[in-house]
Each structure stands twice: as structure tokens, then as C-alpha cells.
Image (tube, rainbow over all chains, first blue to last red; front, side, top):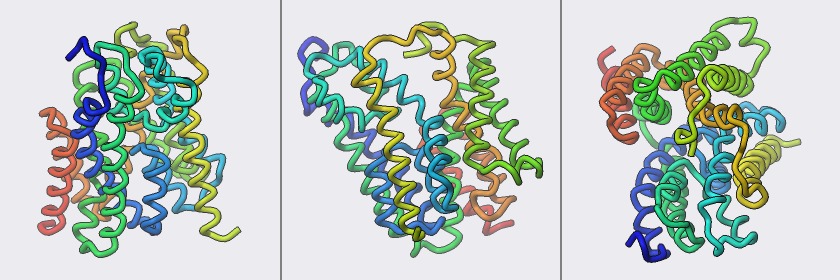
Length: 238
Length: 103
């Protein structure tokens, strides 16, 4: 299989587990959005046009607070900057079937998980495989949001409260294991958490800096320091 | 501007910038980033962002501070055992649910 070109159906098969995962994550997002008072169809539209968990969670907080366009764009720019790097890598992995027009389409579907699967393939990636890979995650993300957003209002209050921690618990599951294993990531995670707590608990900062801005400033500062102290090796940085 | 119009404006701004971040390198930027510092920065940002988004906000995510502490502890322990994302989330939610009943 490694030698023959990847087909659409291979993509579908690889995308199935991602799609199932997205279904549950999006459900938690939908519930969160409904707790914040966003209309269910609006939340669904967010998921269909953004396809990103952390960015959307930060986004709905800003939308619920009716923040500024500049704030939401800057916050998304920082939170989603990783997709830029992934786009660069994917660009080199893509074969000739990725014409310029098709690159405009494929770009919408770059996520952490889709990228990770695509980049782990030994051979070059063709457009049909990539789209096959993206279909089920996209559908799972959309349907999960619909289910969460519509059931958010009818769920009992204590269940709603319990689901409120879901996305944060997932973030912990993403950052904690590598932080335990590697000093550079441990430093990044710990310093960002510390700075973020400082912004939250120091009244002067909290009263003068919105939540979104505080998060991106903390993240940028700790990542910038980490990059200076622990420059990554070639292989760390696909 | 009405509230709904404001919300849609923010939605389009969010979707637009997110698409641009993904599209620009794939369409126009077809060579490798040379600066080691920039590559390092982009490598660390996801960890930093998720950490800054989680702490301290996870403690206020359930409307019950003590239950949220229990949920956070369970998430950390489950993550230390390298359980999958979904399992960590489910265990943490379950812990909060039970803690609210008990505490």
C-alpha cells in the first residue's frame, strides 16, 4: 500500500477515527456555546467556517462579550498560527495534483489531526486523498456542534456544568503528557499558565486587559522565551 | 449596529483570519521557513496557548469551584496515564458531576 498512490477511499478510512473524535469534541463546544447564550445555528455556522477547537472556544467567549473585530482577529492569529507552519509543511508534501485552485480548497481543512495523519504518510499526498481524509472530520465537527448546541438548552443544569470542563480537560490531555516528558515544553506550559493566572488574579491587569488579549500576550511571551532558551532541532518541527 | 450583526461581523472576522492563516502558506509560501527562531516560536505557541487558555479558567468552567478542582485533578491524573483526549474529558466531566452531588 505504501507504494501505490493513495486514493480517496484511503483518506476516508484514515479520517474515520478523527471524525468520531471531532463529533464528541464538537458536542462539548456546542454545549459551551449554548451556555454562553449563542443561538444553535450560529454556533453551527462557526464550526462550519472555522474547524478549530481552541480558536472557536476563545472566539465564542469574545463573541458572547461582543468584543471588537481587532481583538477576535488578533486572538485567532495567535491561537491558529500553528496552522501556518502546518501549511508550510503540507505544501512540500503535496504532489502535482494540488493545483493552485485546489490549494485554496484544501487550506480550509488543515487541522492538527488531519495534518498529523497527512504528514505521517510516506509518499506524497494527492488532493483526492486529502479531501477524503477531511470529509468525515468536517461532518463530525458539524454534526457534533449541532447536537451539542441544540441539547445544551435542554440538558439538566448539573450535567451542563459538568460538560463545561470537557474542552479544558482535553487541552490538559494535549499539553500535559509532552510537558512531563520534555523540559522545553514543561517550561512553556508552566510559564504560560503562571502568566495567565497572574493576568487573571492581579486586579490592575484584569481590569485593563480583556481575556482574549491576556491569553495571547501570555502565550506569546512564554513561547518567545522558550524559543530563545530552547531552540528546536530540525526533527521536532515538522 | 444590532447585537446579531455585531456577532456575525465577529464570526466573519474570525473565519476570515483563520482561513488566511491556513491558505497563505499552502498557496503562496512553498518553501521552508529558514529562521530557526521563528520555527521554534511556532513550535511552542500551541502549548503556550492551550496552557494560558486552560489556567486558571478551568477552575471557573463549571460554576462550582471545588468541583472544578476535583475535575482538574482527575484530568491531570488521567493525562499522566496518557489516556486518549476523549477519555480524559469524559473522566473529568464525570468527576465534576459526582463532586457537585457530594460537595
